[in-house]
Length: 61
Image (cartoon, rainbow, N blue to C red; front, side):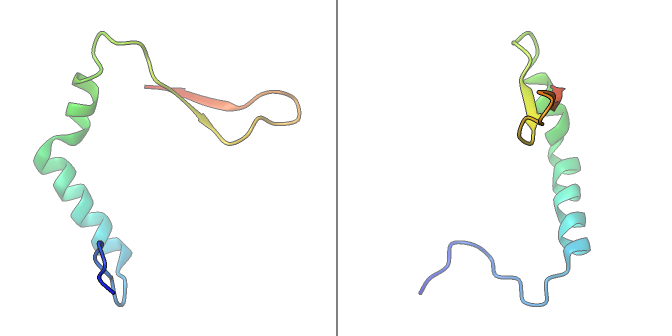
């Protein structure tokens, strides 16, 4: 059976996190995510289901 994704044997999450962070820094991913949204309607993330009192945490980007 072929796999589409890399299998990590002995997964080293701190190393993976460092690799992802290095890629983000090298490619300016965060800056691109901000500049591509300039002038557009804010995108709102709702975290989790609504609570019993009707409130939930939201974040605008």
